[in-house]
Length: 426
Image (tube, rainbow, N blue to C red):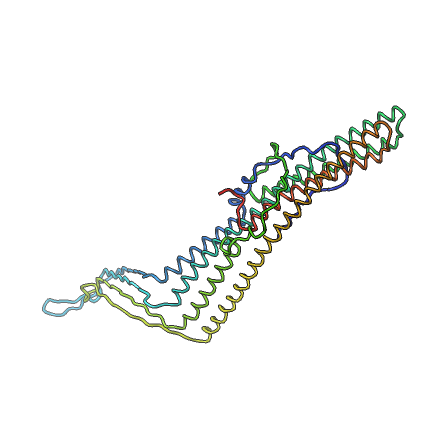
């Protein structure tokens, strides 16, 4: 299960004075979603499994159709054997060159077991196709999470850059006040330490961005380009009722695939029982040769009835019934998981809306407090520690706002994917 929270490197402690600028982001999400559908190894494997299931289905149906086989041979003898018959006549016992050919047409007439197995294979093919779509949606889910995580990381880098610039301005201010005799050397040392701490924070933020951008590229095959302004924001609108996101079973690929897999196993179990019945088949063969004594091709028609029984038949039936029970349990698990995912995603969106609204309010208050602390310190009305704490609070609030907005955007995407809706436009 994919966690809804986005990991932001070094969510800590320093403060920025100015409002956060819009995050500079990558290409549109659609670009990465399409890339994941074609590049992701999981999607490629799912497509291969669908093709395999389609081939197996075709093979199962082919067993019910007439089959034609042919073989031929040529024999070269060193000597031709001739039997004299008297009166100037003779018979060829072994010709020097001998040609032989046979063609056989086989027609299954009554094979109920294979007929039901063919239906099971067609059902399994539909299950594989639905599983392929489910894998595609899961890759979209992971792509969306990593996409919004990179957006959040980019926002954190920009916030860290602003915080570093603020720390350097504070250092210059402390040095100026020390020269004027209005501040002690300890204030300058503290300001210098704050600059170095922000340097470390910025380095950690850039590392997180590089790591997460690489993870996104590895999943989608698209190299993220961190250019162009894209605001990471949300209008905080509420989602429709959770019931509107619960579709029919057929619209949830994970559940629909489990249902088709269970039906396929039901048909396979029935086919195993039908294998206790005899099978009837017919064949028509044509034989031609240049051997003496058989001047024209000869045909032969055969009607065959086949039946066999031993202890393995009953064991095979019990095995298929056990597989059916397991498939039914997987269907129940898939149904519960699908509906739980929708429920959890909907409530996650609701919670993240409240978190994002609160984080924005916290940021505004923290920034005002940092502005006031800076002005008071400049005129000597407050201590430097008050300024540093206010700036750290403002930075922490900015980081919290970035994370909350990214979490909310990701949660909305996860809700739609949980409901079986692709994020790609139709």
